[in-house]
Image (cartoon, rainbow over all chains, first blue to last red; front, side):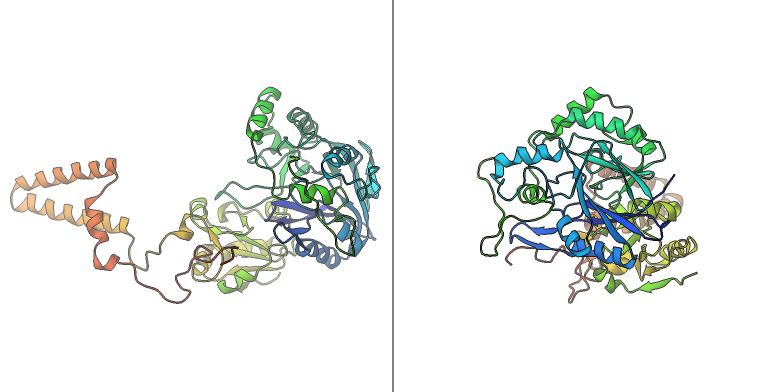
Length: 289
Length: 204
């Protein structure tokens, strides 16, 4: 089985893991970036590329070419650097076809059809469920894992699986399911699909929220470890109790600070809206949430 | 094999967590008490597994890694183990977390905001010393002066139990007033611990 090389980059501001995944078996070393971060200050409405530039520097140091820019879902807590990475390094921006439903849902909030194509053509490729593709010589496959949002996708690359917010590390649990279209029931079903992968597969998570004073931010646990010790989704937790606990914990939870700017930009693959005299804007709907 | 290099504690603040990794190799209680506030790895020396470090923290063998312990001895062992495992850019943090307390590095945990005890003996140890000496005297009095002095030992024992239950200790109160336990005034950066006394991201 192919074991991909994986380098993780942790953004402490949003607790996000960005991954560079590549194979060294190939003469043309190509890589994928999964869930990149564009640094954004909510108060000054300014972006920085510190996090993305570290990823770019790494790709260049390793003499890799960027083949795929992958998103596990439309993030609600950070803006993707997909567009910025593509401008700098090229590559195909891809996401699940299920995001078309998300585009539609949020059009009602943002009234943004003018600069956010409803057919998803702002993404270069929309994956079908179970679609297969390759990163250089690494076999890769889509797995549809909704729950956190209705369009979450996991990427199985060799013997690694990148799950976004479908599951977190064993002592953290799983992602919230209270966003529009989110479903604890779907999240449980998705976790069972992921945990059915071979036990030695490595699961890489999209965020880590380390318990205070216990450890630093980590990115990986094996399927075996998740089956046995995930505090929300291990094999000893039945569907009913997962749903009850998830819904109870999500009730009244504050929205992420960057929810509105993030979703808005991420629906355009990380671009800000149509410019007026060269100025772009973040549009904040009043009393819509 | 690459050489283990050393990083002065004052340089830790300049490390870029996106391009390097600090690995804290102290024990869990030490780590719970005080640790780096920024992203880092925690893997105690006795369970240090270079392969797991690579996998769990998403680094490669050529990622610069800085081993951190209390004063530098365990970090040296950890660093040598990582070099032996094929890591190519390994250094230890000179003076460990003890040295980091004296420089401008954000630290977290109860130990990061606790007032420095200075170089003296902590109050709890002073207390044990004082009680120990008292019992030596009481025993001496009971043996060589009059057995009635053993009543003192009984009273002290009852007092100890009471102080433990009530969590109030008259002896500790007295000891804390002793001149050698007064906080010494400090100047310069030597007493600033982490970001605790720095202004935040306000308009200040």
